[in-house]
Image (cartoon, rainbow, N blue to C red):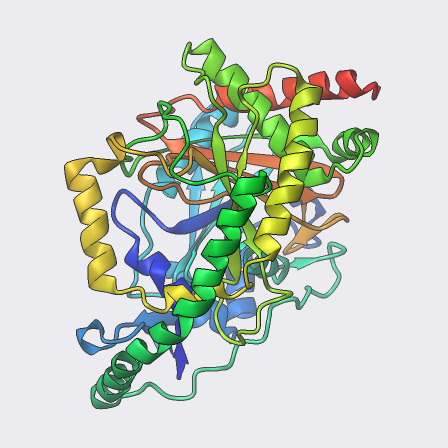
Length: 466
């Protein structure tokens, strides 16, 4: 029996019609490289053949009676590729505006929990001659690392080369437990939770004590609940707006090399902070204090847990939106992020996963409904302003079922109180930036993505990189 971990299951519990917990990836591919040419039916059937025996794509969620324990994964005995791979065409003229509007609409639609939690939308009619492929997969199934692996599983290094096989080992579903067995297991799991909780109290107190000590000496990461309020920090709806853009990875690396101690991630965060500063200044909304971002961190390499799809933690960082000079902002971020990483490393890798085991579907569901109905995110402290992720991608060209991938734009989930997500993914020498927001609070995210290139250029000029 393959039970969801508490962290995996929490993404199911936190979901509502407004707060959707899937992640999306928009591929722009060149169909001219496909050995047999592009034809939707042939592409759909090839994907279906590839994923038919792969648990990540063919399992669905089954609840435990009375929600006494986290759900389990079971095989979908009626798996049908036609329910997962769909075909659409853009209206004329088929440009970025039409594409982003369609992607935003699809991103605002939830996944059917009666089926495996993924979809692909093949979008034709682009003026560029490319074909767009929008993937959607629930966060209960993947984190950033697993999501990249799921994509790579459908790719090759040459148009006619064998497809890659980079998916992590997932045990095949042997049998589906009956209601009585699930009920007994659920009761046993519930009975053992007080003992688990007692075991976690002492190390958690140590973590909090260490954080307090770091705060006193000024080496703690940014504190949540201290972020300033912006127009995208409030109650979200189920509507989404998206935009995307590209940055040169070589230019980012050149800037990184010119600033002592800086990393690529530091540069990405500094560019994001500068772009957000420009966006908020143009709207007359720039807060006097810096915006705070939650930055997901993979702990796959250090986690001691064997099961589970999500192995992530999170650190908080100030983006320097209160600093006008781009070089000064990067230097401040470099130092602050060094402290934040040291603080984060002092926290055991599995702490979030351990505490998530106590997640209760009824409690989480009630909390989300209360936050929505009472619009609690519109007042009170702001936990963080947004989420920013930097996901490593392939350093070489990849071919999606034979079609060369020209761009790959990732879009993560947004939350009540943090209605903006910026995700950056590297791909063959480029950084592809995906921005997704609540449409009511940020109807034109293109105004933000346009500032990324301007900010990187300003930063390159400040450090003397041509």
